[in-house]
Length: 78
Image 1 (cartoon, rainbow, N blue to C red):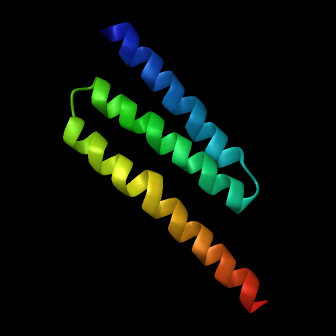
Image 2: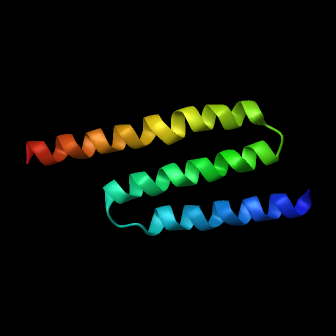
């Protein structure tokens, strides 16, 4: 089980780095969705399925949608 946790933590670190290094905010919203999905897998591996489900519901759909709608509004106002 420790190997699975180590792999999940490594994937979380890699995807978090990808989110931080993505320069375009629209692409960053997409990489954020992938990061949240990997983070949810980590929570599931750590035996916290309720936290994983909440993270999937909020982080995969709502947060990137809010970012994209904000970007659309900012571009429209210019």
